[in-house]
Image (cartoon, rainbow, N blue to C red):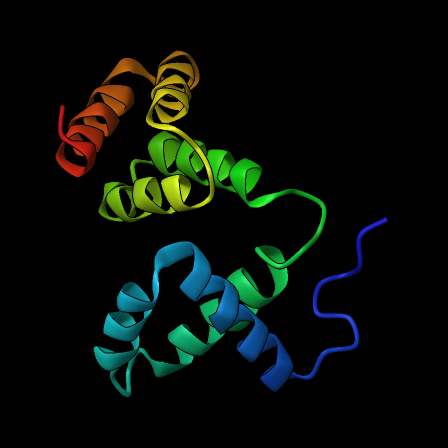
Length: 131
């Protein structure tokens, strides 16, 4: 059984754990840019995603990071969240997926999310990975 989200951890510990995972998955450079561009308006949101998305969900032992990347790519493609797709293609490589496996995720998404969604995902993947 996996532990309930954040069980036994303080908000500060969840934040620290989330920041470590976020840096490993997205790269220190990306996280440094995000925190440097943080404003008074976005500070609470940055804290929230670090604690909850990265400190709780991405830190759970129930799925490995490769599997989490497949789920994230599928969700981003399905919902048309193209603004985060390039970042998560790079994260998927960092998490151990190959370009061939990413191609398969996009092809699978074509069936369940639609050809236009997959077409856009392939365009973004080509921008990230080249030919």
